[in-house]
Image 1 (cartoon, rainbow, N blue to C red):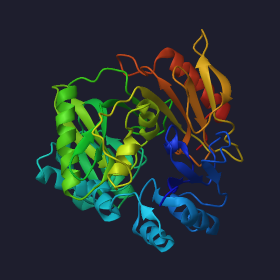
Image 2 (spheres, rainbow, N blue to C red):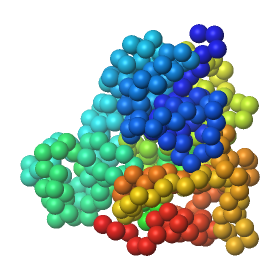
Image 3 (cartoon, one colour):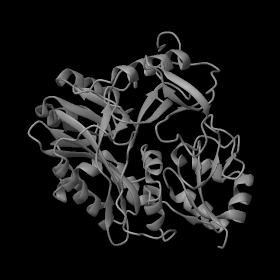
Image 4 (cartoon, rainbow, N blue to C red):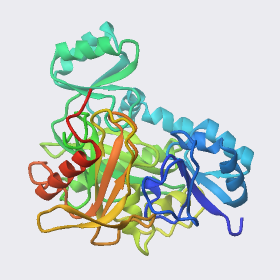
Length: 409
């Protein structure tokens, strides 16, 4: 394996920003060309798995790769990599699939003693209405879904009945609403331990950023976290449970800290998560989240270093339908005295330098899909959960540039 590298294979290279991974991607996300590390293979589809089927990808990986990381692993991807003679650096897909099923997770986590909200799960339809109505204000979720696209707030029985009719026959969960602060903890399950990073505020449902009422739309690592010790305790308990179930590598734990200071575990993401590049940019000379992920698969050394993160991000999701729009160029920049983003050089895979701001522009992929993200240092939101004024200006300007005019249904 001398001279071989670990490759990240995905529709775009954003998760590899700030890392040392080589990348095979279907698009460059507007980044500057990097012949040594970034190879764009048009026609690769919208998943890492479909890229693996391209003959050019197979030849490159056989020649140069020791292992491949995908955003989400699958049994089919493992078979393809095995046929190429290349290792897989993703956790057991069967374990991950069960845990990401929100209906399964709720019951399994409760049985493990992890604090989860009251809930009922099953197939959407009239039979579930009677069981779920006593929950009152609640959250309806399809068993599978990302970034809040299949998550709906429920304010009463009529709304619940409408959702259960709309999605009749689909596996779902209806959970009691927890009023409080959304928080995320990211960690790595290794063979002998769980490494946890500091918690961050999870930006959720900000209308300037996402069309989904409960959609995640950013990570704020600089604002204070109330009840951080209790949050870390529940996150560690959850991480140890994932490790016992056989998960290895990066995972995220989403919690809500209620007004009494009690953390409630909402869901887990046993895979790469949106904040991965923030950890890589923050690592400098220390171990990064991705370094520990590779250590979980014997591809790097676990040096026992603590994880830290000083970067944050805002993620803009597409509101309307755009026809033929191009992603444009991803750039590094600064803020001017009026709080506006001033673009500079083209962004590279190295990511923004300290003290600068990274703007990643993506190709429009449809309503509710990621359109752009701002990667920066410092806090993002005020005491009331609103975007800081200069960031609100920047987001509105970006929205006008990338998605001009009113959102179209």
